[in-house]
Length: 145
Image (tube, rainbow, N blue to C red; front, side, top):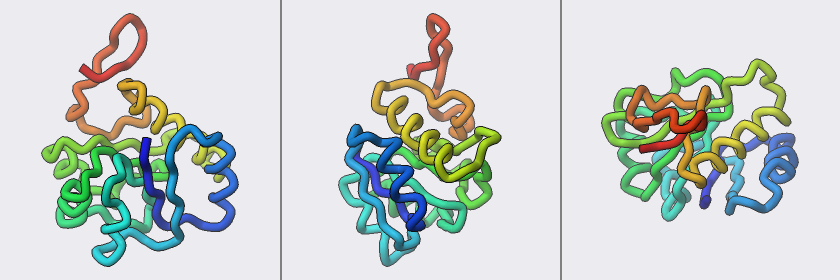
């Protein structure tokens, strides 16, 4: 998948690159996501954000207009994302729900979410779509309908 990760700290770059293993087309930038930098998401399917990137209604519309379909936050918390608006817009949202919130494990969770979406599957416990993804259990595996 084509993805851009905003607000990347130096220590996150290596872990994301290792977890990715060149599977996904990742662009990693240190810039925060805001009205001036949202254009960097043009042509990307996924934006990967930190808890400092605010995804309110306006920003979600900007992302959708740029072609973004999925959002991953590199934390467990989702209070910085208007989940109801994202669901209304049909944007899929995932987080990093594991108890291990180390930089290395968050990188692994992020890539796991990208890979699940690329395969057309639900991200499971990481799903924050509030039912918008229409995830269903099929044969013991989560997938989108």
